[in-house]
Length: 170
Image 1 (cartoon, one colour):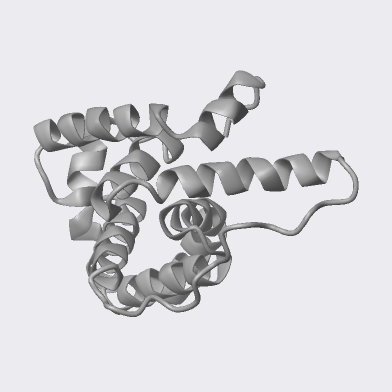
Image 2: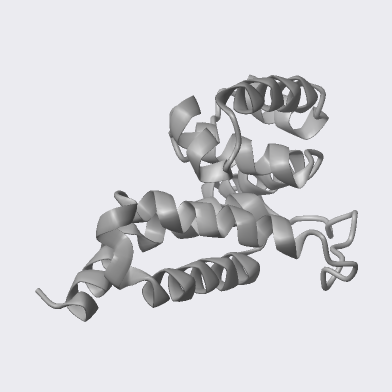
């Protein structure tokens, strides 16, 4: 299999999980797609050296996290969402799923970008503390302490607490 086919296969297998992680980091599908695309473009440029890196998915996640953190250092971040949503007409499963995603996204945005990245990688990406530390480029102790601080902060978020007491998990 040549490099192009190998990379295409990698993208086909991991794109959905990468996009999910990117959405959890950014809270916006369009930004998440941009983040994944940016990370995959950077990875493609170094794909021939991927054998020395080891796990390409870990490399792409690292690129995603560093890009996300760099993007958050910018002054202007684009559109600002309204605080109040319009009244809704009827209750259904699809609407409940949207409310759940909104609650999770809102809860994640009370965290600092670094804490958000750690929570996304550790709990939504199902990475170990060591894998998260490698993806973040920090020590395992940093992952542990930032995770603890982030979880403590998330416990105080009212919208997330309401969702969790209803028995629906993100």
